[in-house]
Picture 1 (cartoon, rainbow, N blue to C red):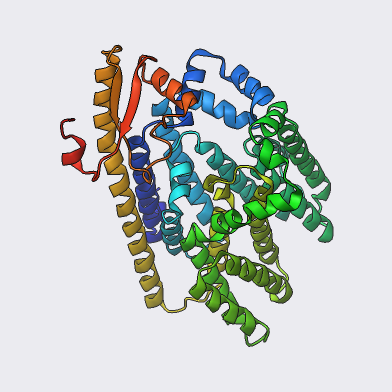
Picture 2: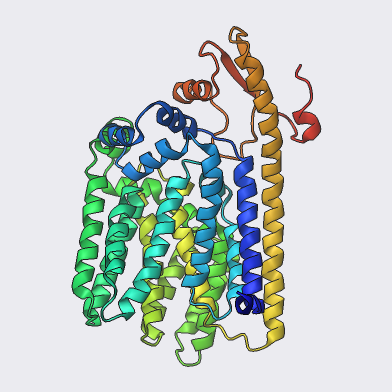
Length: 484
């Protein structure tokens, strides 16, 4: 332990990781259950979670493991307060580990800066929402699979446990989310092709792993509940032709994949431009890629970012020297693209669905960063200071949002307790959270389902008429000001 702590790099990594975990723990603690959290919390309190998840598979959704998470965890907010920061800290460390970093501190600072720079809706729907964690879990497990796969592919006779774990992950990840199923199916297929092209000794085992992905994907796609929901709740979208579905979702694809989390897209573009700059003298066509990249950065248009990404990938395949790392980058970019391309055929394409694309582009940027020469130590210090400054700036922004949420929590709990003791009060006035703070904390008048479960979750009378009122300005003085 003394030898480990004697390394300045190790001490810095412990400090950065500790700050990341504690900050995530704080904003998680300050965020209340909201929206579907109430539905799953009530359902999990009084029913068998495994049976409830199976019922949902039959009647509503093929995401068995996501439904199970909801019924198991949503009733226990304190448990989620611990699991959520642990989960994101694990993702953070895996991103650093998977970047094959020679500069872990610099890479960790950039990773932290970008993690806290995602689009606002993506933050709301995945970072601090219990049911949004069902999108985060597949990402975490997919990163674990990549980590194990990298070592597994390099071994002539890998331990049996690695193959078993890879089979389990390939089977289970699809049971969380449809586009996660597409990602793992496509990712495993790419690895299988790589194994046969390179005559990897583990190619027969990879067939087994891919088979598990096929079975898991078939289970989620074959859900009776999902088919029924598509036919009833999304009948209008389902009736559209293939081309019209794509046309309807195309603007969302460009926004969710590229422009909504613009900081990460810019970081990816800058790092790929640095790769092109390093190789431009040897490969003259890269001058065109560099020009396109600068135009794209200036325009900040989703379509241009898409075109640039495709052109970069083609150039990288054509000009990068053959190596495992080359195909690793290609694998990451293709998995990132596939996770969102499949959403073009989905009736609901919200920000949370792009979590995999955004994070895999982030990881690709971290991997390519390692190839950039930073010979001068002073330059590394400047970059570290820059990344650290961005991290602090974004964390202060998050702190302001969630501290306001915390104050509103206190006030709303006071109001809820008041009306809980007065079931015949008639109208119940509850303070609303600002629209861009957290996901679905207020209930619309027409939303009978969430209105019912909100009252059940907080033990309020179903006869109460809830009115969620907004403030012109949110601060401690206005939040706690007497009503009326």
